[in-house]
Image (cartoon, rainbow, N blue to C red):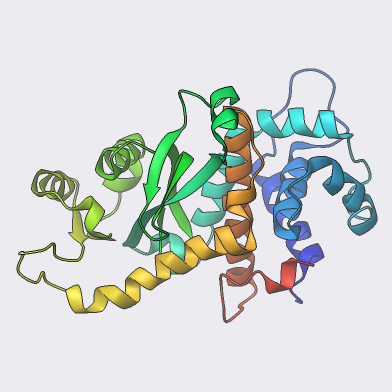
Length: 297
């Protein structure tokens, strides 16, 4: 099987449609099904269209043979915002359908999701109260917006993810994520969680140990070298490359969302697009599982 955007969209449609079989909507069936909507959203993220109106015009030319009906921009926007729970479910279903789901080595990190640049934009934004100022150490800059927290396998397959206020502590957000998915954590044994120094805390590490999670992180200043630290530099580069895929290839920081719902679905779109690419590459036996090259044109 060749790997291109058409084959990915077709395989994804079949997977989602099978998973949604038996689930009926109230009222008249929509002309664009939920399965088609999610596939359309994935294609938009992979092809790099931030504007929904530009995307729908391009989709008629590029993917008209796969989608008999394409809505206008207001209808697409409304359907997409309402589909956030569905998109989250599809991300989890695709991850669980891959070989990487059973990998108990997890990597955690957060990356900025800027939502405004100028002071007037910050003051007028609908995100006021949800977003805030934060600091990005890797770029030595402040930003106004949110942070995307991602727990993934070394291949980049997302296991857990969340959007949070930029001022919240990293340990606090990770603890909440593990609490929400307590059943997922409980059914696994011997989880090795690799992080940076921002997650260091004696009480937090003991809390993780109580959940059966061993935290592997770099030592802090004046702390003796921790077990396994020499291998961390290479492993840490993996999560950085995952973030680079989201930001460099899927334009995470150019999401264009102006409300809580808008930012949430646009970030979820990009996480889903990366997940779908990894899933399809795994199913078709591609040597580089996180490569998007076959699908971005």
